[in-house]
Length: 257
Image (cartoon, rainbow, N blue to C red):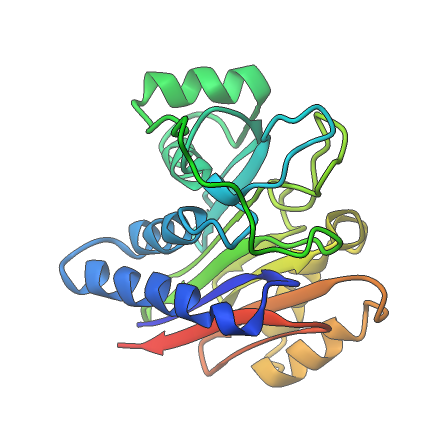
């Protein structure tokens, strides 16, 4: 198994201790029998529980003071689950994970909240610490990709852009934009959600992987799609390698087991 985790484009490099922990806990769970999908969900959940990252309890506030969160998870079998503008739940990636076993691909707002309640997802804690570790001028997202020799999985979660309008949706829950997993690899992006979406970034990166292009070369090519003023980062794993990087600081980790 190999797993990569990131704390988002704009997250401070020294926060790699948080991404290390997420990778370690996911590998430990996998070694104890958890599925690769559940291991990825565990990794992203741990990042959501870290107030230094813009996801889960560390989510940026919208212009009205609310926290509306997006998350997604995808398996190389083609299964995809995502939530958008979810409020009042601690780990939106866990809600997205449960959607993989439902008739739905994407739920937003009230529908996502009703689904989370029906599946006993943990509510957002009233005493959750505020996000104090992020430069609000930068966009970021937490993410994970993993490969166990048979299957690829990608997961993402985001608290959105600081002070954005309620209802704003970035790349995270949009199929093929923020993440993609297929038979040849998995990709998880971070940065300016609008720019990532307009480029269909994750799917196009995966298409390069599908052609057999080495991971480091894919990384360099995809980074070149974004100018230095547009926050962007990516982690990816293929059958033969992995890579991660950003056009600014980004905490990220990799672990093989």
